[in-house]
Amino acid sequence: MTAVLEATGISKSFRGLQALRGVDISVEEGQILGIIGANGAGKTTLFNCITGNFPPTSGTVRLDGADVTGQPAHRLAHRGMVRTFQLMRPFHTMTVLENVEIAAMSRGARGGTARREAGETVERTGLGEWADQLSGSLPAAMQKRLELARALAMRPRVLLLDEVLAGLVPAERAPVLDLLENLRDTEGMTMVFIEHIMAAVRRLSDHVVMMDSGAVLATGSADEVLTDPQVVEAYLGKEASDA
Ligand SMILES: Nc1ncnc2c1ncn2[C@@H]1O[C@H](COP(=O)(O)OP(=O)(O)OP(=O)(O)O)[C@@H](O)[C@H]1O
Image (tube, rainbow, N blue to C red):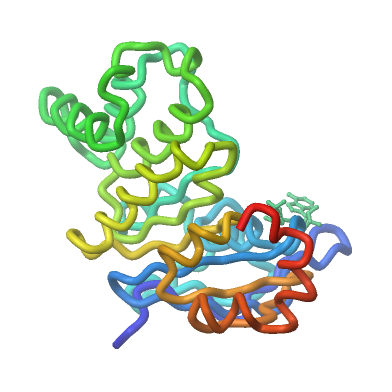
């Protein structure tokens, strides 16, 4: 099987601080890759290098085999790769539906089509009853769903999720996990997700990469990685409370 998304040898320095040191990840079509690691390990920086927020200092990003290193987010979105952000950035003075509609329009949907697709996405992400609320007035859990809805409205084939469950109580996490699993199983969507909640990593990941100090420390199935003594020592010992 060929990788849909493959990042090889990704390094990134910020004025002397080496945030990434030759990171390799790859994910095959219809698979979910989970990325774990302590705060500051470089997970979000890796996403930023992959999704064109800034170019890596060195290394190559390939999407469907094509070199897309450093391409801006909008061009990657047209190629089918979209991400969510850890800190949400919706337009707070617009309604939930309008926010999602704008995302649909950004990939070319127009007029009634954009509105209809936005409505479907809003329902699918459990935001139906909030559709006409200003997004700035949403509770945190619903803002998270809006971030996901905006990404899905862009119809990605490859979706990168940065801590999409953070700040949600367990009852709020379940529907998001159900949705992500459904997107993989029914639409074959490929996903990479950064997550600190180990129950979610176990449930969703076909494959896990554990990062430490800007490098990959362990990779394998969730069972293999989460029981790896180095991973337990470097990360899980500190984070196990939420597992
Ligand atoms: N734009 C930037 N400028 C300078 N340093 C940065 C920048 N972005 C990240 N860093 C640094 O790079 C390192 C990796 O940060 P990063 O946010 O990627 O970690 P992370 O694994 O995503 O952490 P968390 O789990 O807290 O989100 C940190 O030392 C961080 O301070």
